[in-house]
Image 1 (tube, helix red, strand yellow):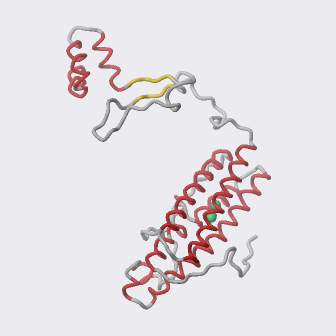
Image 2 (tube, helix red, strand yellow; image 1 turned 180 degrees about the vertical axis):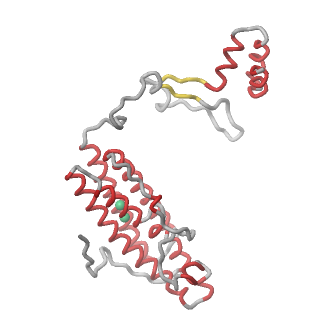
Length: 266
Ligand code: MN
Ligand code: MN
């Protein structure tokens, strides 16, 4: 059951309306990482959730996101207001000015309509919680960028509140995932194939002109990791090692892999 209380969750003040900034704010109103997407994602996940405790969490945060939508919508509307009458202000967002009469619409900052395709709902609680942690991180960084693009103290104040709440949600989703007691790589029930799971395919070679390197780190070495060097060249290398016609390929493989590859394939 939803009930509208005629108060904002956080007070919004705008000193100097800035229509171009109002247009940017729409990213958090009708954009991929915006408040409507968050509200719908968590609420739909909540409706599908059979775990009563985590369902409560999903519905609580889903509902809070609707209150965030109200805040960011109010803030955007205040910034967009001059475009109701002023031609140069209207140029900041003709779609909103001409079709929407200077009010907020469910579009992102580029005028693309909001879509349910933004939502990540898998029906697997731990997988959904991971999506939510990532969604909160994206929302946080979008708010941070918005804060960096305005000097209006009232706007910064409200945006900092919204930004902070995303970290709070992230914290709650992380704790909820942790409380499920599943290992970080335990997704679903079928175990991964041990032949393949620890192989790191090093699918690039050499160094680039702009300092690109072939890196080693805990993501590909140490522990159970086994590096498979340039698996795509493996066939040619094997041909080369077998001698005969392929030995020419072996020499050229070191310097000109593509040409050698073609030759080896003959
Ligand atoms: Mn939010
Ligand atoms: Mn959130």
